[in-house]
Length: 339
Image 1 (cartoon, one colour):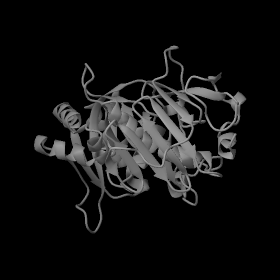
Image 2: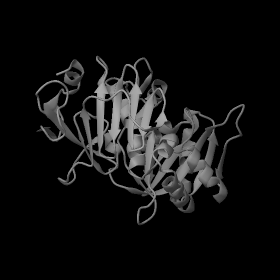
Image 3: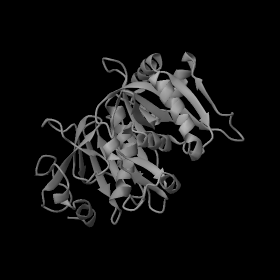
Image 4: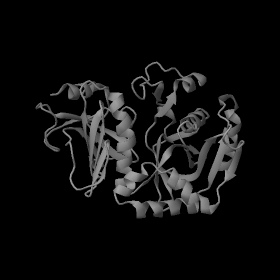
């Protein structure tokens, strides 16, 4: 067994739903030891994983076959018949996706049901999960015909509310403040929407984790002791308010496009987007749109945008990023959604 595999196959007795399997998905690594798999919840999927994934809630549903299997194994250097080829990722015409992150891991997504991870020697578990639960997660969403937004999401009054915007706009900060006010957390970084749900677009809850900078943790009196860093040397941490997580689909009730007011931005305001603006806004905030196009999902993504735009209010919220004044904006968000 490789050192990287041994690093990841640890603490077996401390994780719920771990079970040994052997011979189902083929040999893993160089040793003869059976893989120890754990069942997790992700967007309602049963995820069967050889990697420890503490960001995800344990699976507590039925005993159906896994929807997604994540295992350790070898990843090829190149795929064939490529439609997307860059230094970091490759996508072929069969729908296989490969992501390579130097000094972290290589990831191979072989359709919507399986992910193979090849860690680099000596890499920490947390750093491997950063890309698994972002870019690789995005591949799975597109392959499964879902519409992913780059944003955080909470449930307010029985409605899912997504917060999107550029890096530093305050998506996770807004979500954690609403969670501290008693609202339920649905997603961070990737907000997954089933636009074709029978009762209208709904958000599929992802996992109870928020990526927060050190100064944000300090502002809310959250200790960073025991929290994983997002990346080595980065002062951003993974905060897991498990008690705030809602593991059930929630109807989409609104989207807020966050912007910071400043010298080059308008004054503070909340503006309801006109119907003609909604499609462009949703396209701009889509998670991994290039990958979705490479996988041939452009028609279904356009259809999803139309369904969301036709049923969901979208506001442009421009405010100064002052944590001391955030209560005013949070009350306004609550009022808009609850009304």
